[in-house]
Image 1 (cartoon, rainbow, N blue to C red):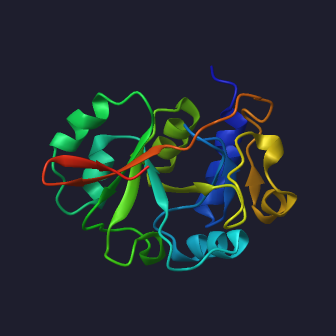
Image 2: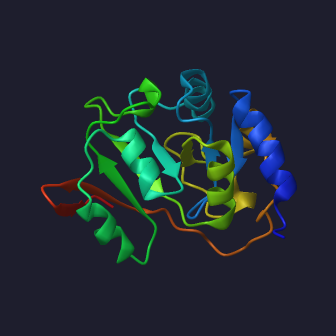
Length: 188
């Protein structure tokens, strides 16, 4: 039995109601909501004081889910991802079924298949992708541990996950690639 069952239940309740959570991911702490709920995404934009035209990262738990939310996936990207040792976010063309304000202006979407046990459990139980954006005010440094998260962010969400709050190892953001013509273009 994992030690985050209560956090999962609380997070699911908030996500199903269209709310916003603060949660640990496979990289840094994130602010999240239902990636198909435009109102939830709008709340995150306002909380982060972020330009509305900036796209978001979406977390899923499996390759199958990527194929559910992207029009045409080059399956070779999954072979590439299997070889990566660092969490890797992929920018895919032709997003479908997600909130419009999650996407980039060109209709692309950044998706990461999450390997973190807490996130995978949450996404699988929620049965939808979850937005993941760094838990900071726009243009401020991304917090690498929970205690670095600004009080405005902590008080601006509907639920703060307790799991992993005491970790002191500085987390790192994911790599970001754009997949085109069977090749990875590394952006970060």
